[in-house]
Amino acid sequence: MAAAVASPLRAFLHAESAGGIVLVVAAVIALVWANSPAADGYAQFWQQEVSLGGGEARVTHDLRHWVNDGLMVLFFFVIGLEIKRELVVGELHDRRAATLPALAAVGGVVVPALTYVAIAGGGEAGRGWGIPMATDIAFAVGILALLGRRASSGAKLFLLSVAIVDDILAIGVIAIFYTERVTLGWLAGAVAGLLVAAGMRRLGVSSPWAYVPVGVLVWFATLESGVHATIAGVALGLLTPARPVAGRDVLDDLERSLHPVSAFLVVPVFALANAGVDLRGGVLGDAFGRPVTWAIMAGLVLGKIVGIGGVTYLVRRLGWGALPADMHHREILGAAALGGIGFTVSLFITDLAFTDAALVAQAKVGILTASTVAALAGAVLLLTSPAGTGATTTSPRRTTTD
Image (cartoon, rainbow, N blue to C red):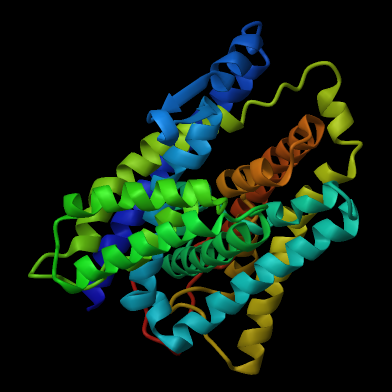
């Protein structure tokens, strides 16, 4: 069982770390493009309209919208697969092992949201309270990969577990709080499609291609229902069996096939479409004078450290959970700081929270700045921990190797 869980985890971490580098490159390209003489071309490219279907089924959106509501479904489907694995056979399957990262993730969601509201206040600006909740797994694991053995394997496992629970909570927030209207007929159609997929699974249908038409219908019905279409991806991922069907490991096959596509295509394209903030004409200075920018920065940097770190120390003190085997307690704050890298999902929620271009720009400046600060802070804290300095650690639990 240990080998069955460790092998896909290593592959996941490897792909995420490499994907994090590609994501950084894509974000830099978007920023340079949006602030270059070709900036008008950047805006026009992503605002061009694209239609799919015909007649009554014809749907028209701009290119950025298709990326956020269409292409990102694959990203959230892969997240759904990873959540399913962790809940069934992974770290979150063991109640005691899952208690600490689960509660730490709750702290890492609630404290940043409250911090944001305390600084930004209410009104339209207050709608962004969900922005500092998210943790970008690709970026965070990418930093851990750069640290190599100077960050323990326990710290990597802890951060990954926290980020996965964080994703579950963020998905729930998107579904409940960032859905403005719901068309019950289309929603019923999406639920019916999910029931069909569940029925096919019970009948032992193991070919992923058989589920593609059903998945497309579920996505379209969800899109038309008013619930954000990416929720369909998560739901379909959670329906995927985590154990072999007819001798075939469907979930593992799907992850190996789709994770590289998500990491090296979907997420970088999303960054290209959303990270391009025009900082000219005093926009940057104006953003740092606005509460939304500082609310996001405080939420992602301070809120994550206090929320994840504080709850982790409290849970350990109460004896409700334990750290992974070779993780030193001094690594907690470093991992918590890396939880403040909220790039991908934070940008995603920004698009849902705000319609005012000024607020969107302020939010993006806050996200980019906070993610950079969180990455640097997390790296420094991990490098100065006993594991990072090469000091030996002892643990009453079984030790593991990186």
